[in-house]
Length: 358
View 1 (spheres, rainbow, N blue to C red):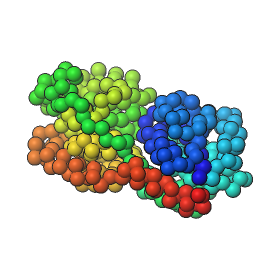
View 2: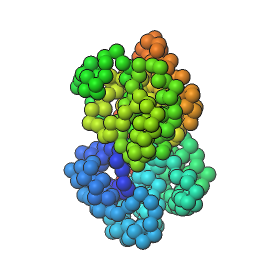
View 3: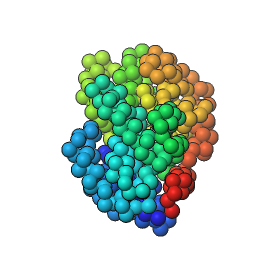
View 4: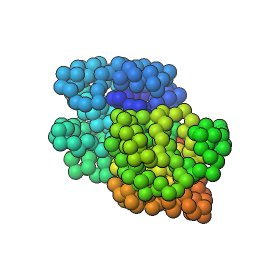
């Protein structure tokens, strides 16, 4: 079977998910082509397992560039048995490119569409294109699936998005504290997130205004467009939060954490929290999107966009060893139930068969 993947810009979870599927499909003997921006292909080493077609897909819709992208996709689509697009914009481009070919398009939606006033109408139109033109729409959370159903999708389902293969920590808690310049008795909070509005990091900072009496420092591993404004708040308000930027030692940070926090306003199947479960971490998270479906009972869930509830939950975990130990035990149990890359491959092949490919 020949599978064409289509994706836009990605710095994290989507790219890692596609990389895993591409690698496993190639190992199973399938022919794989990936159409994506060159920097994405390079970042995730996609050429190691697939032919790569350079596709210009920017962060925002652009009529001229998007028309050119549809033309670029026309040839690869005609040679495919199935097209698997990842993301709303990629899905819309794939649907338009495949509209008269008879090649089925499977679209996996990893995020909710933006709701900002200036772009909401454009993305609503893209949603309709994807819902009505895809042979199957998969969503990483139940709310995305339900929205596609309401918009007229013929077939829908939940996507299977595993965390990357778990890497054990290479350093212990004391080494991590020393590298961060922290006393060994200082409690460590860890956030793994892109510094973007969806992650609700201003609510994280709001919560920490109520936690300054604790010997607690929270570090954020990740980068993104909100870094400068978040750093300004941290500096002005003297908050015990550090922005570390991108890190290659996330397993060490998670294993050393007294609490792992997610303040997200929306999530699909958060890879960072899956990694935290594998690390046996005590988790506090907002009940956003598909978060509850991922963590089960192995986290303290609080309302979205509620800094007071977030701060109280973090305080409870940090100050009560029994609560922390119970969450860690539940995390290990929950991690054993999470989907693997093999599960994701099986789900993808079933999806392709469902739409008549292979």
